[in-house]
Length: 360
Image (cartoon, rainbow, N blue to C red):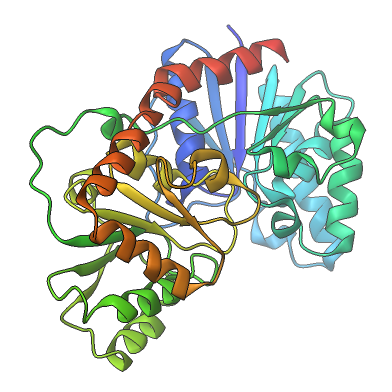
């Protein structure tokens, strides 16, 4: 039985964490021996099957009382001991510094190491030092998973040779066809309330069209550090009765499918799960054409969605008008968007990941 170790900071709810959780469940169901290694356990995490082992790599706080170098060594030693004890055939790491740690801690061990960059490389590895380390250390990985062709261009040829672009699988609840859903005059968004998701841009754009379309409301699903600031912006615009910050909901697919438009306003994205899911539900989608090119790989502008420039609330408002004024155009966008289900079904994408792991 092949052993796979999946390594990430935590399973706190987010796009990368959900993909890793889904992969853990898939490999377990395919009778692989799976272990999930995280540094921490946080609140509001995705749940794992009880049969999947979870191990924490963060050392005891008593071992982290020294300087930066001593603390690095403590973390390095703890993670390397996990690899030695578990002896995985393949280590699959997600995100940032985890990828660097996975490669260096598994050096000279028999385990193969695959690292995955989940977003814009220059954001995931901020600063010249981290970017230099990523370009250098990844040469010693056995494989590199990227989200888009634009992300691939960040790395030197030696890394690109061992890279593979693999999509995220759609969650099962978004692939099931929603019959006879009664549409409401809603624009919706879903994601963490943080600077990168730029929901402020969405609120500004909605404010520009609110008087023109008095029956249309905006609902934003998610939670995060900017919630209070966004509430203040909504009050400043006088739109408390038209814009709702709905928090985290369990039945998000049921909520989203009632809307007419889904909006993604991020400054950067890898391959955004929320956009994929809205397209699978057959919504007319509008997204920023942000680095590292995930939305542009999903959307053919004007065919299955609309792309607008990053941080351009005027262009976003115009896209909303274009859809709200033309029901046939809205239906065309939604119908073409739903075809993503064929390309990114869980069965299809999970098989691609399995083939990738086996080839390593």
